[in-house]
Image 1: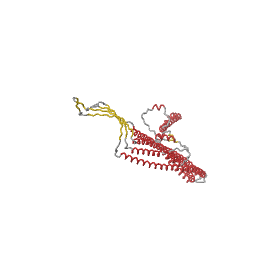
Image 2 (image 1 turned 135 degrees about the vertical axis):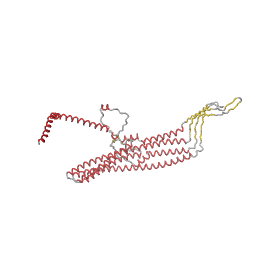
Image 3 (image 1 turned 135 degrees about the horizontal axis):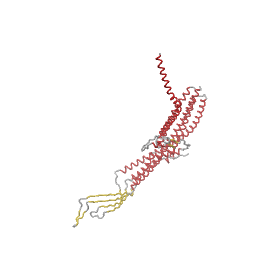
Image 4 (image 1 turned 120 degrees about the vertical axis):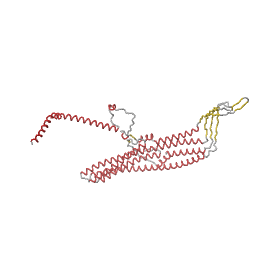
Length: 502
């Protein structure tokens, strides 16, 4: 037993000695603890500030719109040369601001269809200059060398005269100009001039089609933006209504079924918002594509577009279409050009009168004493047989005229039908617009009544949800009809080739 107690007592004595020797250090640590805690806090604050600055710097680098770096940091960085950075358009800070006038200007400047139509006009003008050049003076130079061996000789008495030379050189300059072809070339030139006018009318048609496409896409963006805004507002209303329903359930006013109903309607509203946002993004991409811009560019449109209904008369619209439509003008001009080509083909066997002048310089030989000779003459060329070429051209020209007449008649009737369809659609949308406006007021009143009844515990959430759904549908319907009306007004300007004013 004594041995057992000796070991613990010895251990306790050792521990006491250790504690007595280390007490001053513990006391110093306790005294210095507050200052160390302050230092730790300061260092932690500095590290947190540095970390937040680093995060902000990283975030600003990602977004591309942070603060400018410090001068020291710029000096420490080494310059980078010949590096092509690809910037994601969706990460740019400033969206592209567009309105209808700016969209029209961009389309006229950069749309490829307009450039192609303009190139066709230049091509037709080049064909006209090519055909007309047949009347211009033509100047040719010719040179030749001829070797004769043996050369004929004539003996006259004791003298031997060579009738030629072994080496013969000659140079010739020929000047030629067609005076008249008696209708052949003249009619071809007239047809080429008419083809320029036809190409210009097609250019104006292409230009008008592009403008209509841009206006249609622009109004479609505004329509989908309105639908998205209405759907988002409806989602906020549903969330607020769900909160009210939860409070009423906690108060014992409504059963659990009401909460389930509101949650279900909230889920449907979210899905509707997702679809609306998708349609809006697609509409923006379609607009940017029609402007030949990057479809991923962020865009900000002027969402305020004032308009007033326009009184449209069907008979007047059809008369304007007959008078102004570029397709009719182009076909009419092409028909006149085809008639000129027929006349040219009929004159294909007529004679050609031209003027020729030749200056020739050649080696003197034989009895010739003048190295240079000048000849001028009028040449009348009469074709006797061309192997049936003129007859074939006449048949082609007649077939082309027949085809153009049928096409012109068909196009005219289709334009009349198109104008009538557009005018009737405008009348329909005007009546729909008035009805949609009245339906919107009625639905808003009905929703306010249903909301008051529900909050007072008189009706169920089913009645309120029906009223809310009806209000949402009428708002979207009014938004759609309004922008469909604007699209049809732009279509009316296209089909009549006329600017309609109030």
